[in-house]
Length: 130
Image 1: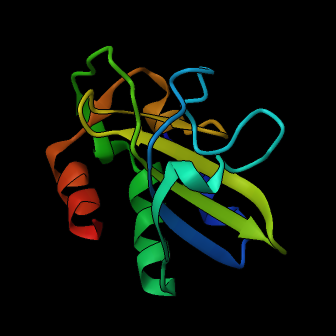
Image 2 (image 1 turned 180 degrees about the vertical axis):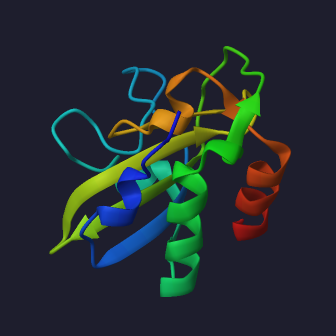
């Protein structure tokens, strides 16, 4: 089965990496809510704008079938997220829980769709970004 990486055709002009605390009281776990708004500033511990080469590698890794295949646990309390912007509007976001080895992207990533967790190599890549 051939997987198409949807992030390689995504139009964006900025990507940020966020270290954040989800709002467990209102069940707002993802970095961006259903209305397209980022979590409040008090929930964001750190925000870093990524450079072009890092964005390219991140996009490749997120959409690659070999980035997934390990087990997934059930906790899903994410603290890491990436948000792609175009003209200051969110066009894609993904919230990641490194504890349970899972992520929730805002658009379908078929390579991840089968409920498979991140591989050790992909987790290492993400940890190096931190």
